Image (cartoon, rainbow, N blue to C red; front, side, top):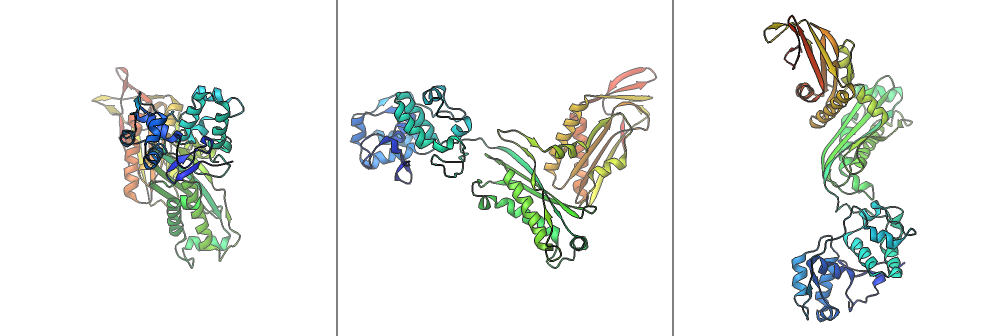
Length: 455
């Protein structure tokens, strides 16, 4: 199948147009530039332009966004003067127009993802040819522009791998978390624990390797786009019972495509570095499973692996039984935590100058837990290296009972203090839990003023 004819690297003329290098006929790229500029030259006017000006207009129409001022300047030299028309907009990238789908027929598929992956000129060309009613020419245009890409947006028209254009997508906040695991024999694991591996600090080196790898993902994975990452965090935790290192890589960006591959690359590079640092003591180390745990942002929506959701659920709970400070601490404990901060809210015996006998907490449990999860993920994203847990009790609570326990762990105490304070503040502001106060004169709904703090 012939490819589009390139008059120069910046000028596109499709093979199905059957236009020679002298540009004696007006290519679709030039028509696009003129349409968007609101001008319609006749064939005589087109041929009155020099070859250089004709090629210049084709070049403008080959770009994602047409410079209408320059297009008008070029066409001002045409004789007779082009007719003025209402400027036309490019076909929207969200979905192919119904008239194009109808003209193509069932044999030539054009899904929303394939349509969105086409360039602006490609979409314009298909719609323009479809409007002429020339079905044979439309078939040739489809074969050249869409071709094998109808089966996958990552294939070009001739079936070759290509990097999908994301220029039309809006930049949004993107986040992904990936995990991996390295299981070691006793000798290698003891070396890791004692930090006396001949190559140096295993965990610190693996952490840096993961961060560096995330930033170089597009150099390693052929079809990945280079992204401006805003955050990369790699945490390595030791599981003594399993003689393993658990790796968790979090990557964030504000960009047009997701960061799943960056997170997976970071986790993989960290795992490989652990292997490299300790392979002298265990050639049979096992790596895996390496997988995506979470992602958010983008058109496809959010994703969380089932066991990752279960782990998060285990850190956020609303229940009618007694709360345990030790339980909250266990939920955030990990090997690399240098500090754990705990907030405890208890029922006191007075409020606003009157006695309190009892508090009743009520909640929309599922909504409350979901909001707690959102808050925990927010803060963990804002304060690097933190892990959070919230336990909240509902039902009737006597004076002295624990109403809420918040715990935050971090590599350093400052981050643990900040995270715990932010956690209780946001829980107070946002979580749908209400309480009713019982005093000698009756009952009333109140705010949070009746809880005291012990740290």
